[in-house]
Image (tube, rainbow, N blue to C red; front, side, top):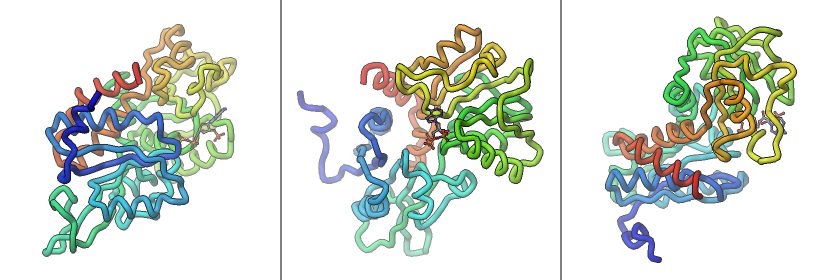
Length: 309
Ligand code: ATR
């Protein structure tokens, strides 16, 4: 069957894309194309498997081909810090780039998003890097779990890229105490050091809370739970889930990880990472289009994709 969207592709169609490695299971194209269609734009959002060795060339290629912007996912978010001409404050603050906007310089020397030029011939171009992940974590915690981090105690599992961003963002929101647990203890210790240096008012500990100590939020940022046979991402002998008020798992496929199932059974409020994916994508769409993103349309498309994709 002919895809009705594909039928309307023409020489005026503009493009955005996501680069990752691997990328085949990305839900971003479904979400972003629904958003673009709802805004009535003749734009499409594509997905490309780009090896990290080729990231520089792939960013340059999209720029000269008149792409409006890119999303970057694993393993590109840190590499891209050195591959764009300009870093927005968000990318500097959180130390990672998940969104690029291509821009051209007008005759007055102002950099403007490429959507403002029908064709980029003769225009000086640049890639500007942003981070929309950190704000998305907060937005999803508020919307999906009714968690307001200020003054709370949080147990954070994982100290990879996502864990570090989440820990820093929560610290910047003045959480009371952060407990950092990671398989590789040295990485949790390094994240704790960084938080102590940047947010000295936040209490940071590595390891589980002491016996009897409760937390307002348990946040899983590890990849444990992606596979159906995975164990729980924490040691429940050291921390029983009933000691957490709310549990957030950044994994969204499967929608119910073993952690979320166990947390529900223990009586915790729960949410998966779909909201985080939604809000980082909505913020990227806003940066590229300059318009308010159609959040509910994008949310529906994501749910459909994850449930049936
Ligand atoms: P992301 O950018 O998604 O955070 P990452 O930087 O590769 O990806 O981090 C993956 C996280 O999941 C890390 O905290 C990792 O622990 P290590 O730092 O010890 O590698 C965690 N993780 C992955 N597989 C794990 C496993 N089998 N058991 C426990 N933790 C695991």
